[in-house]
Length: 195
Image (tube, rainbow, N blue to C red; front, side, top):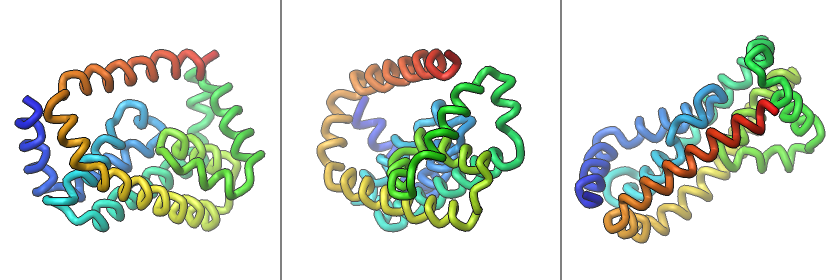
């Protein structure tokens, strides 16, 4: 079963690899859907299949561009009042916590926030709420995202053969692991955000 999935994914990435990576990155960066999309997995598979199906440099640039677009949308949502809707949905404390963290950290710490879209999306949203200068925000988001995507892309590319071997032999266990982590994140993340 694992080999069949790898063959399917290899073909999909051969035909639409850059598009898959860009769209998955953008969706994972969006604060509204980032916990529900497997963007990091799609990006990782792009780096894994870069050896044979896609160019690693273009896959990294596609992923970074998609993420930056997502962060820009998050920023715009924060800037143009979407926070009040989230507060009505019970996320007032979450918004306050994110805003205070963004206000209290310097640019070096904020650039570390772009290590993963689940951190960078809310951070971008808070930057919009706080009415950051858009030029400074987009410079920080673009450069930080590009650095992190290059580092992660190279690391995943280097470990790609190991990943494919594990995936082909233990696909069932990997699906159980990902499912369990996803359910825990949804359950405990939602509980902590609303408390």
